Length: 317
Length: 289
Image (cartoon, rainbow over all chains, first blue to last red; front, side, top):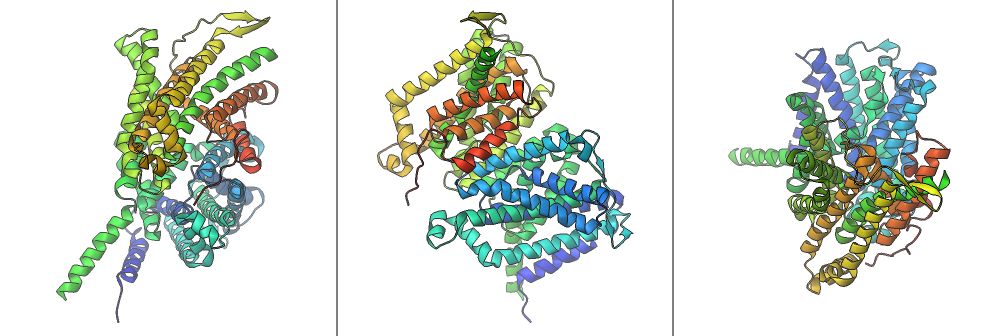
């Protein structure tokens, strides 16, 4: 039987992900859970930037919408956890369509500017809408529960999140191979050429935004249940920028890259804790260096090393 | 009440206009929207403040130095970050400017602290009577300085070789290159010029809002709104758009809601993009293949 390097890589990654929590403590579980949550956001950027070539500096807005929609539906309407998470994704997706609506008329970077204003607007509305969202005091969110069983530990929640990531990664992979996904990539490479082949630009860009917002909303919903408490400060502009950074650094054209990006954003604050305020400066510097010298992200480096190892071992046998 | 609101709105608007001019300048010359423009303005203003307090230079000298400080900052940034990205997809350059945003924003907080400091004003606080309305001298001063910048820019683009080369490059980069225009230098000059203008804007707004590492964010958003309103490709359009935004903002804050006075700009952005994406003052430009 012939094995190709990609299958081996995928199986290895999966084994590592399943085995990771063993031997860690509660804090370790929590960090792993955040890695999965961030990785889902990274996936959403894979769709938006990697396939669509569109930028967003307002994903904290979608994240917030997902988190609040899910938390409120569970707390006030008594929705079960999974339904709440789905609702979080759907609410974010609706707003994704709204933000992308100007795509019908405009080209270029205008959408990025719109996302910037959007995130600010959402954060402010959530803050001012006190009777619903708790405003300044914030909102308590119950622990996640599956089929009536509450997941007390982040250990079990991690596996739920892992499963969620794998499902969404599978969807992303299939989307990339679908007609719509291919059209989106054609639009990124040359809008004019793609349009003259009959691809509707605006429709595809709106789809990219909707899908990206949906993923991010789900991630936000999952994050709310992990944190147990929501306040609007969690969804600042700095978060939007960190999301973009991790997605670029992990790699925008790869699902494994999304995982690396998530790990970067979850682990960097732990490693850089000594630096305190300078952390964001480091993010900025790594972002610029990455765009200039490693546009494929960390994953392209890993792939290069993996291929080299594979080739030498092939030659030896 | 109304005349005061309108004049101080125009003053605010002219600060937005300076930042919008910087955005449009870089966008026209290099096709990049520099999201870090506001933060670079803030950083440059902090450098000026350090010259004022740490070095002890007088305020007028620092005012004259503000533009060169900005120009140096802009050109150094362009050389370090943008040169390698000229051949890369546009989205990469955009991401790089977002990286710059993080660097300048947090470096300023890290170096100079997170507490707002008061910045000395160039103008006396006493209002003057203009046609029966009491107008703050500050507002008039801001409008005057902005006008001066606009006039200088006009002269640059109409009468100097560099200005004409920049106009050529913004119309058709490849053709300009074939005519012997050094496009790399145009990008350098655009970044220098834009950042010089935006540091002057920072200098003008700092006495109003206090000098703070977060002071430019709302300004940037409204400069975007104004530039989009005027059509992102037109320098005069951006100025007029920003003046409109400044006046609307003041009236909105006085008569409707102060809580949302910073976010209404977002509403304007969305509305303009939906109904008149080419802006109020420019004709739609079709892209040639």
